[in-house]
Amino acid sequence: MVARLQQVIVFAWFGSLLGWMAFWWHRSLLATCLGVAALLTVHAAVLAIEFGFARHVNRRDSTTPPPSLPQMLRAWLAESVIAPRVFCWYQPFRRNAIPDALHCDRRRGAVLIHGFLCNRGFWQPWLHELEHRKRVFVALTLEPVFGSIDHYVDEIDRAIGRVATATGQAPLLISHSMGGLAARAWLRDAIDPSRVHRIVTLGTPHAGTSIAHVGQSVNGRQMRPGGDWLANMTPRAGEAQRAPFTCWYSNCDNIVFPASSATLAGADNRLAGGLAHVQLAFDATVMQQTLALLDADDRDARVRDEQAISASDPLPVETRRQPAPSAATGRRRP
Image 1 (cartoon, helix red, strand yellow):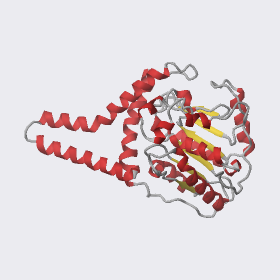
Image 2 (tube, rainbow, N blue to C red):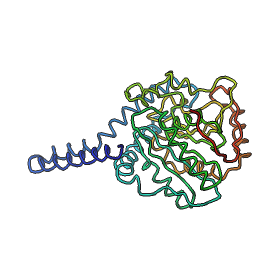
Image 3 (cartoon, helix red, strand yellow):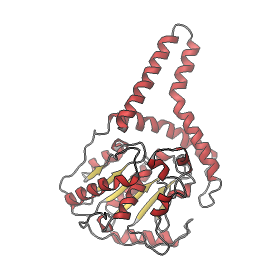
Image 4 (cartoon, rainbow, N blue to C red):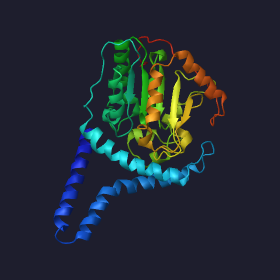
């Protein structure tokens, strides 16, 4: 559904561009240029509004270093370039260009979970890298697009089982934005959390995001700060997280703000300063350090978690990590 919707938008935009040029070309060169410029930059104007809103909200976030104005401008420019590539090419036209890889391989595999209004095409650079490394992976397309995040749990469960069957190991879950909440929903219902090695979230609104107040879909409302759905996802005081987490977050995120809402207490929280929301998932350092977790020994991962907890974490540390055991079969709670 997302691919068809974005295809319609791309074709409508391209038709509008050609129509405007055909109508004005022989009438007014100035009107032609102004119209073309407007059609080429309208998304950048929308992004600028998001960045302005994020900057305003982040001023009240005392736990994350505020971005400088040059940082915000660079993030805005980068997002203005990356977003059309993702939403006008990767997702509508290249979503199935790289199929899932489920060959027999004893090395750990990955499950990739996209965010709101996305599909598996979002992960194109990651899939290229995983394919180059000959790793096992499954990249999901979550449906229904505007349904409850809870509806994605069964699909995630099946993907985990497919990767574990091919590798004999618990997979690494890599998730962007809302996909991280879907991964946590799976973890909440899982009888055997050791079926995943670690959950990595990139710009996930763990504590909600202010921009979700404008969303009217079921999953959009579930991401509102202080909502019942998010409250039910929060571990009770003293209850350990059921799997290790690495949470990437940014002080220039134009979708998830305040910035600290993309962190979790007790997680390996990693600040990727100066990166926008989609840009965060396409940063080479973020990708390489995340994929390095595929080969990280559980003991090393636990050491990093303990270091992250004992360091000056902006969030109160109420939970401790459990180790990630080897893969095991399991089923979801009803």
